[in-house]
Image (cartoon, rainbow, N blue to C red; front, side, top):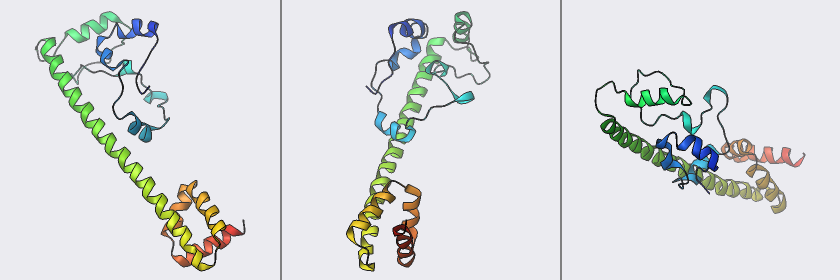
Length: 180
């Protein structure tokens, strides 16, 4: 569904207690596919693991102490205190604007990264095929070269090495590969 979803109990417990997370719930995530290319199924573990509840969207005070979000009194105090003395509404509006700018920037950058990764994969695959099949002139048959191409297509580091080798060294590599 390319969105953050949760069951009713989680929604009631978390999102209702922290309204700032509501805009992210049940909303399609722009560039989800591109982010999936970059991140894949990776997941932070240990001290780097965070949930959406760990992200602080409205606190611009760098001197603040971390607050246990399960403690509603502490959360209320933290959101009502501002070091600049400005009202919560003005500060939050400015913070939301800053967060929106940052999200937009990250989204654009992830889109560029994903496009570059797609381009790299597509370009190298075609180049790999051309270079492997060009070895027919060295006496290798079509069926063998198709097998080599399939093998290198699933072994990226070996494919990269094959592509940087001279024709002479590619021939040596293919002879060793044919011997098993």
